[in-house]
Structures are given as structure tokens and as C-alpha cells.
Amino acid sequence: MKKIFVLTWLALLLAACSAKQEYPMFWTWMEDREGLDLDSLFIQMDEAGIDGLMLYLPDVEGYQKAAGLAKQHGITLYAWVWTLNPRGDRQHLLKEHPEWFDVNRNGESLADTKAYVNSYKFLNPALPEVRDYVMDNVKRVCSISGISGICLDYCRIVDGVLPISLSYNYGITQDGEVFPQWDYGYHPAALERFRSEYGYDPRTVPDPTRDTTWCRFRQQLVTEVANLAAETAHSYGKKVAASPFSTDRLASFMVAQHFGDWNLDLVFPMEYSDFYSMEPSFVLDATVQNNRDKNPATELYCGLGAELGGSFENLMENMDAAFAGGAQGISLYTIAGLDTHSKRAAFRAYADSLRAVRRANGGRRPAPAAHTISLNPLDHPRLVALVERNIQRTIAGVPVHEKSVNGMHPDDPSVTYPALDLGPWEQVSRNDRIAVYKVTDRASGRSFKLLFPIYGELISGWDVRPWEE
Image 1 (cartoon, rainbow, N blue to C red):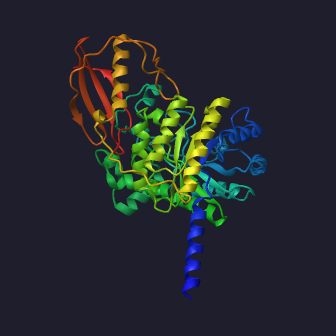
Image 2: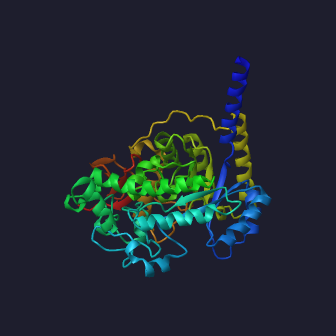
Image 3: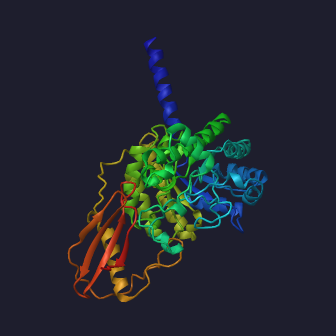
């Protein structure tokens, strides 16, 4: 009997290890861009050693074709599902169901107004009709043979506040504050449910975005949709992933995603450092935080931007940072960033080496080393170097910001600027969202305002501006 028990225990242990190995270690997102050639895509994935694909296509026929090709190439295929921001039938819904679209604190509906970009047409998660619509989409893709799972995206509300560099794309200044025109979730159905549960209207408090009850309520509405989608997909025998914002805490503030409560198999937080601090310590800090805050049943991966303005060398450093923080794998947005044979070959060598480490460790990446997250920018030398470089650029009159993929004008590292003679950084203010410093360059006689968003309990951006008394 004892021998049978030991053998049974070993079988269960091996099965558990095997279950952990079923997910590809390296993935990419891809959508139906103009000129997308699925045959070429899968060949490039083979070349780069990427064996997981989260794919958005507008029709079942396209997915069926993709599933056949994926099987030929040994690639795991998930359907990339846009949830609360509909895509293919957006115009139809705007015409037939304008009452489904979300409303901001000013009472303006996304059916009639724009939040940042025309494609931001989010539905409000409180509406039963919206939930039925999302579940119908999930069922549609889960019924396709050859689809192994789904990846939930846009399961959120409109960005209450943008990464600080991206705000320049829209000519706005937020500096951590959520203004009424970008503060969404105030659909009449959501307000009525909130009043019935908590007895007051969130719009009556001085700052609803600092009202803990209201913020948690919006997060809960989004969580309910995510978990309904997960339950539906699991009923079809499909795995469920999601692509939320960078960390659970940052996402909770920015877009009402408390993904630590989502019943996911895998999560790919989008730790796009080019949108935030532009250096690898952001990825390390974010991954460490996610490893701590995620649902214990969920496998933690990391989403990285491969075509968002950073170099290939930065991408490789960001992958090192993600694995050092405890990620079990990587997804790229997108493989189009690996745009040469040499990049794909280098990526393949990296991927193969990490897969070998995982195999040698029983199907798991080794546990990360202890790491302390610091909110003091002076504890991040590369961040300080970026700030000082942009002080130099500002003094020289060289553009720092422009309308671009990440709001930053590319720097030319070959340019030599006059040396700085900086005094000490003086912290002049700090609240729950942003820290402000003042520093003076004695060489030029100019002072500068340095801003560091710290919502999400990590440094999530920076900016350099001339100091104005």
C-alpha cells in the first residue's frame, strides 16, 4: 500500500510539472494588419524561436486557417479577444446600441465624444447586455478547433491618466491627476448599482478618483467581466490569458484592472518600459511587484514592446530584467520588431538558452533573487542619466517630446553637449501620485522641474521641464 501511495504521489508530481511545461515560454501578439501574411509570420516565428501566438483576426475562417498553419509549425495559438473595447463591429454597435458605451464624470458618452483617440470606444461593464455581448465573442472563438486558449485585452475602462511622456501626444498636462473628461465608468447603470449598494453618488465627493469605495467598485465591475470570460472559456476546455497594464497596482489606478483577482491561467502584464521610465529597472520592479500581487493560481509572464521606440539591445536587457524579477516567459508586441534575420537569430539563441534553464530546473524558471523596490529616483542610476541627458537637450534647445509612438523625440547619442554642473536634487513636493524635484545647473544658471509619477508604488515615468517660479 505504501509503495502504491508513493508511486501515486510521484505521478501527481510529474503531472503537475508537466502542466507547468505546457505553456510556451516565448510568445508574440499579432493582429490583422494590412499585408499580414500568415505563412511568413509562422516562418519568422520559427526563425526567432517563438512558439506561442496571441492572434486577433476578424472572422472565424481566418482563425481556422491560422490554426491549421500553427499546428504545422508546432505553435500554440490563442485568440486575442478585445473585450470592453469592441473592434470589428464597433461602428455597428455605435449605430445600434449607443447606450452601451461608457460615460465620463462630465456625463459625456463615448458614443458621442472622443477620449484621446477615435478607437477608444469602451463599453460599460455594468450592463448585462454588454456582458452577454462579450461572452458571445468568447464563445465564438472558443468553438474553433485548433485554438488552445484566449487572451483577454481591453478588459478595462479608459485611461484615467496617461504615462507622462504619452500625454505630450495629446497636448495635455495631467501630472497624476484624473480630470473629469478622462474619468470614465459613470454610466447610469453603474451609478445606479453603486447607489443601491453603497447609498451615495460618487460624484458628490470632492475627488471620486481618491474615493476607495468607488475605485474598488469600478475594479470589481471589470473583474466580473474578466472572470465571466474565464469561466466561459474554461467551460470549452480552453486556457485563459490576459494583457493588462504593467502592474496590478498601477492598472488598478489607471484603468480599473485589479487583475490579481482574475481567474487566469497566464497573465502578460504589458511592461512597456518605453512608455514609462525607458529603462530596465521599471521592468524589474514591475515584475517583482506582479510576482507578489498576482493570483497565486496564475502563471506570470511579461509583455514587452519590441516596436515601440526602443532598441533591440534594450529589448534584450528588458527580458533579462523580467526573468530576474520572476517572469516565467515573455510576449512581444510584436515580432515585427525583430525585423532582420540577425535579430531573429539572436533572439532564438536567447530563447533556447532560457528554455534550457527551465528544463534543467524541472520545468520552472528559478526563483528570483530578493529585490527591494525604491521610489527614490536617485537609487536608479540609469534613470538619473536619462534625466540629465534631457536637461542637456533642453538647455541646447533640442526637441525632447514629439507626437510619436511613445511621445519622445529620438535622442542621438553621438551628439556631445556642454557638461552640466548640477546642484543637489531638492524634493519640493510629493503626494500619493507624483514626486517633484528641483535641480539647478550652475553652468547655465538654469533650474529645472523633475517630475516622477509614483502611482502603482513604483516609479512609472519622468519628465524634465524648465523651472517656473
